[in-house]
Image 1 (tube, helix red, strand yellow):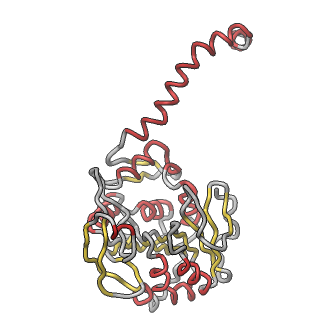
Image 2 (cartoon, helix red, strand yellow):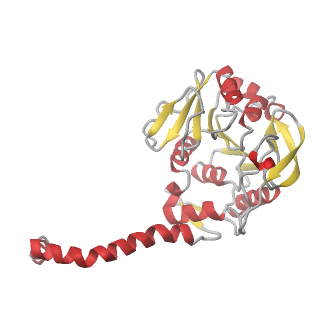
Image 3 (tube, one colour):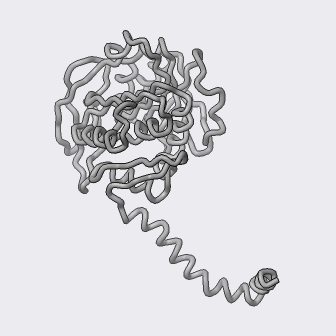
Length: 305
């Protein structure tokens, strides 16, 4: 009875007007703080609880922006549409190749999501690779995740790696071996890294690659070319970052067509089939590359996002 009385009282015209006039300024201030605090306050070294109850730990001083986004907003705080897509697929595959693994976010989620999955994680930048290895150990995933300090490419050997500076404590994650990149044209540090043609590494092995994630700052075409035999044999689903570029990503598009794959733009509204990558977009830089034939990992992805 008391609850019903209070309900009627707060819905009274005059009472509701008074309550709104008092609470609206408080609401605006609270809303401002709720958006500004996650932007301004960074959490260095965090632990995230996954939907299955397992804990994802990050080492200190690396991936601070990424880890903070996850801390404040949960798993959907960083690349939400891509994250949901990969998490859906992690539960359905046994082999995952993480190309440009950074400090290992998706490798770690894969291992913690599916105890039977095996991950091959490739990251050439020395400090990021060190963080990747430490994160694997911190999360006790050494038996599931194999790490390689190598840049995948269309040839095996050495390459110059162009690394932009970063103003903060974190490590810059936009380094690349692309020789015509903006990273090379602007201020940068040059490193020597090992490169590997993935077909030389994997093609003679019996296990079938089912899922790949590629994030390599404008060397997608070289990576795909260097693993083309494996892709044609195994027909994995590929999630690939492809940014708008002056060259319009034509070489990448040609390789995808030659491999008989169809590209879909991953957005928060769903998957949109595209015929090219040369269109403006402020967000959602990742694409789902799906084989036109081969064994199905998932019958329907449309309900994921």
